[in-house]
Amino acid sequence: MDRMRRLRMNETLRDMVRENHVRVDELIYPVFVAEGENICHPVESMPGICQYSIDRLPEELDRTVDAGVRAVLLFGIPAHKDEVGSGAYDDDGIIPRAIRMIRERYEDLLVIADVCLCEYTSHGHCGLVRDGEILNDETLPLLAEASVVYARAGADIIAPSDMMDKRIGAIRTALDKEGFQNIPILSYAAKFASGYYGPFRDAAHSAPGFGDRRTYQMDPANGREALREVKQDLAEGADMVIAKPALAYMDVMREIVNHYNVPVVAYNVSGEYAMVKAATANGWVDEKKIVMENLLGFKRAGAGMIITYHALDAARWLREEER
Image (cartoon, rainbow, N blue to C red; front, side):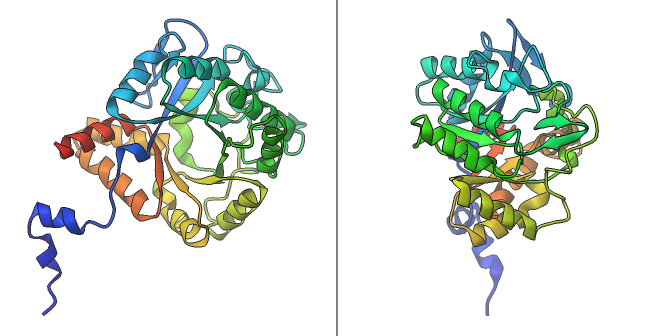
């Protein structure tokens, strides 16, 4: 008689038949870099996460390296914003300077540079604006310029998150023209207009000043449309794709994995992180169990890598289990 419990009777056996695992080297840690000096500013809606000025950024990067996490995703918080987001593509902007510092001090740390205008525009949108409309094609050269600036500074991967149509092609063309043919593009291909982004907008100071982002980010009701987005981005030159948010869109992640033989990255976003932290603070959940269950869920859905604000804690827990 078939009894499924036979393979669950002790921890060693459960480990041996386990189908999915989370590994430390699959984790990517998002980091917020702010203009100024001596800044370590806690993000109130994201307990444990801070904005760091470049002079204090090594404090967080040392913790990252010590935890065994090998990749960071950088977001910039400029001192000045304008209508055209010029800080995003300034050679001396916050992110290029941060990348150059990391390249000098952390040779083996993989640097992923987020490419978007929202942190740098006075209106908070991801593209140029005219008469209340977010302009698609006019934004593309600026995204391409920012990508080249970050690659020149030493970024290992370019990750456009803006969701403008045709931006992957524009970025790939610009990178190739400047001799960066070997820099991969990690596209936020399936990025939904989600309510889970609120804490991130606190951290990055990137909330839109009017309206919302539903004209360019995906409708949460549409799953099949995500496959079209991915197909288009891959055709234009993307090497990897992100599904975002991860927790509410694991079905989308699985569909992408089933349809395309490319690395798929889950983005465990700020709102998902904040909910776990809030429930933990109230004693309602076991933080470690919830976090690791979520991360395993992303792996089960097919993610090869996971961007998560829990990365340092998860890495510590995984190492403890290995001992």
